Image 1 (tube, one colour):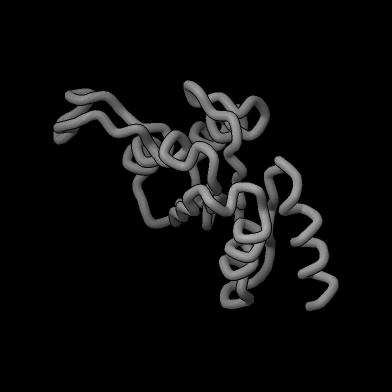
Image 2: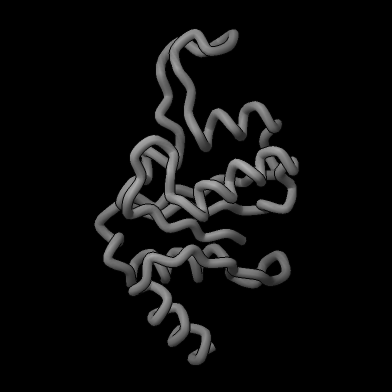
Length: 126
């Protein structure tokens, strides 16, 4: 555990995205919070989303946002989690449950930090 916490302290200082693997109930989200708190982004928001709990369309809207009237029920513009967490951290739980098409869009965010104007976002994927 001490070694894991040392690794978390080291990675917290970087702008790298982090994959946290492990079985259910092993404290992955607690580790993600520890990384966030030890990072320069600690003053920013920490937003978590369970990717397996939402339909593909709703998950895409939650992550990337949408414009008012983009679909039935879109009564106002929604920035999406990536933009809302700009300067903070997003935790994506159960990312393996995402569709392949949505994973491709996520890959672009990971590679280029581009969802309109992102700069200091770090993704923690469990």
